[in-house]
Amino acid sequence: MSKVDTPEKDEVAQEAEHTLGRLIAEQAVTPIDDLDELAALWPADDDPDALMNFVLSERQARGQLKSEDQQSK
Image (cartoon, rainbow, N blue to C red; front, side, top):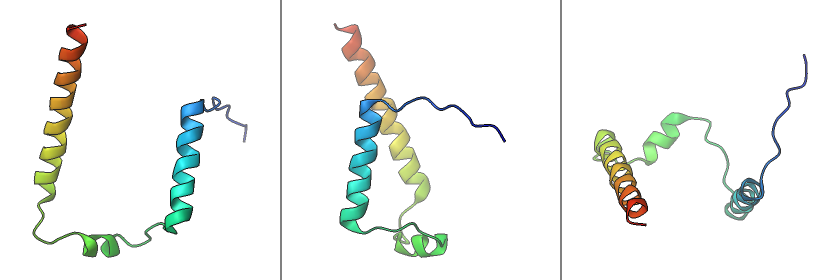
C-alpha cells in the first residue's frame, strides 16, 4: 500500500486540534461506544425534526445576514 500525501495543517487547524485535545483532557471525556447510551441522555419529549428545522433555519438566516452585510460594503 502506498503512502498518501496529505496537506500540512495550517495554524488555525493546529490550534483547533490543540484546543480540542486540551478540552478532552480537562473534561476527561471518552468516546461513546453505545448509541443507546447516548439516546438515553436525550430528553424524550424533544423532537429531533424540530431541532433539525431550527438549525437549518438559523443557518439560512445567518447566511442571509452575511450576504446582506457583504453587499452593503
